[in-house]
Amino acid sequence: PGGVATESIQQVLFSSAAIVNPNPPADNPLAKGGSGGSGGGGSGYSNLQIGSSGSAVTNLQQRLANLGYFEGSVSGTYDDATAQAVKFAQRKLGLTDDGSASASFQSSLFDSSMPAAGQYVTLKKGDVSQRVWNLVDRLINMGYFNGDKLGTKYGDKTVAAIDLFATVNGQPVPGGVATESIQQVLFSSAAIVNPNPPADNPLAKAADNPLAKAAPDPDTQTVLTAEERDELTKLMNEAGIQTEEFTHKDAVTWIQQVLSDENYYTGPVNGVYNDKTMKAIEQFAKDYELEAPEKNIPNDSIIQKLRDFA
Image (tube, rainbow, N blue to C red; front, side):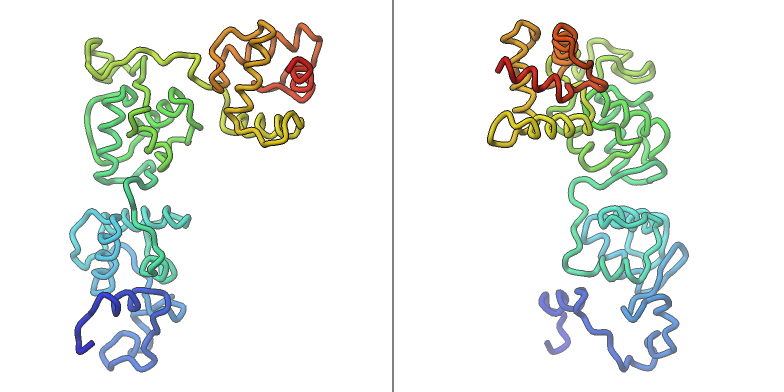
């Protein structure tokens, strides 16, 4: 290319197909016994961590910035912001998020298949990032965070707020981790404002706050965990009720319709396994002397009896 780093040349250079120079120039670290490529496994990358500096760190920071993981300044010094960005990228790849950029990690990072950060990355306790500030701001406004002070560090209050949000919104409780899926719900228009905000949340101190909404309709709130939803769908499909496979919503709709026809269920037939559905199942099982469900969902004997009335 006549010394020009064209786009096509860079695509090859930063891909896993790039060939390490077998005869590096005299002053290149690889020509000095591989001192710059410790742990590289032949990849040409050196293991980098807090305190590392130089062009390898600059390249790392620039790549992380280009992909949307790095929020700091490209300085060539491996600082806390660099370690945080590496953690974000490691989580995206499903790796241990220790914040150190191993040679193998860099090989994945510089590969053309490396995904960009996107709108959301998984956030955990101890993270320090503008993304955490945005998360806390949303949790405050939605009535889940016990306080009103914004910050960029993910602490115990954020852990509690995320789990509370998941519970109120019928999501699997993530153990204090703001997963990408939880954030998608939190920042969506479907997110439910907490009807009972903690004492130090602004919504608890201002009943007329325009963000405050009515408590969610219990008929639209599932009482099942993600595991129970999957188990119910599986049981319904194994019962051979219809030739096509049930989706979870279709399965619940079928149950509600049968129970409604038999005057056990009084709620809307909406495919949401709400508290009324669960109580109707329990009463149905009791009236027909069937084995009571051990969990929130009907067992096989209850499903087969419901089938008799379909």
